[in-house]
Structure formats: structure tokens, C-alpha cells
Image (cartoon, rainbow, N blue to C red; front, side):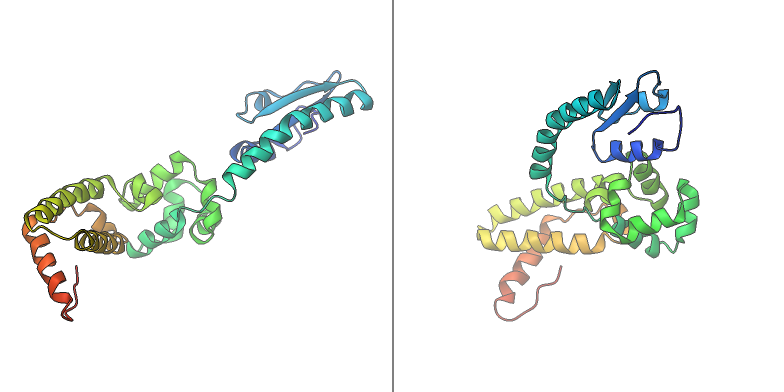
Length: 230
């Protein structure tokens, strides 16, 4: 970034670099000052003060040689991050709650087009800050864990207690491990399918031992052709 005047409109590009972990070199000609906004940025930055083209070229070469190896290692280890599906969960909850995109955008204080991009393009979820994510979760009636991972704190506790009951039944019934696994996997799949409804995220029902025994009985009967449904 060539810093030849106090402000010339490159601040946004600087912040985009900060959000994406891209290092920035501030090229400062002799006699010029760098704005406080740039110096106070969280960007991984280097201030290169130079006197003439030869001096500038020498320092830029040193900056690149010192920065490129770390960037290459970062790229090789991170690769292309797999989207978490935050936008699709936001869209699902908003539609089920019958709330317009404009209403949510106004409530959280963002541009409607930004919200559209986040909902429709998985890669745009990288532009979400923790603050915005928290606000969206509040207005959609879920916790941040659901938007991030598709699970909620109440769901985690419900599943933990349900699993404890299943383990007890498995010991009592001398259950085969594959049956135990099939019961638990089926329950988890069904729970994830229901979690798209905002109301389901507040469902704290725990699967008791008798319910697990009933499902286990039906699982054994299923081998004779009956269908098991959770």
C-alpha cells in the first residue's frame, strides 16, 4: 500500500486484508506520515520507509522473502476451508419463521444484499463477525452454536442424557454393538433433520430407557421386514 497522503480511500482494502490474514506493506516515501487508522489496524503489517526507488526495491525484496514462506505454509496447511453451512441454516430459520430478509437486515444493521450473499454463497460466511453472528442468533431465536455447527447447547445436553440412557439399555439387554450404533446413528440423523425448525432447537425432551427399549425391540423386528422409524 503506497502511503503518499493521509487518506486516499485504501482503508477498506486494508481491512479486507486484515480479515483474510493477508500481510500488508506500507510504502512510505521520505517525509510522509502514515495515518493513525492504518497504524492502529489489526493487519499484519510492515512499514517500509524509503528514500528513492533503489532503496524501495531493496526493502520490498526483503519483505517478500521474509513473508512468502509463511504464506506458502499457511496455504498448504489450510487449503480451501470447507464451509460450515452457516448461511443455509440462517436461510432455513428465516424462512421457517416467515421473516423477510429486509427485516433481518434492518434488525442486525447490515445491507440486505450482504445478507443475501451470506445466505446463498457458502464462501461468504467468512465475512461474518462474532458480533453479527450473535445478533443474528438472537433475532432468529437460536444460540450461536446452532448457526455455527448445527447444534445447540440444549441439544447437546439432551443428547448426552439420551446417550446415557441408551448405554444403560445396551448393558441390560446385552445389545450387539452394531445394534447400539444403528440406534444412536438413527436418533442423531432424525434430530438433525428436525433441528431446522426454530422451535425444535428449544426442545429439551430426553429419550428415556423405555423409548430406547421400544426402538431396540422394533430394530430386532425390522430384521424380519418391519421398518424402524425414530
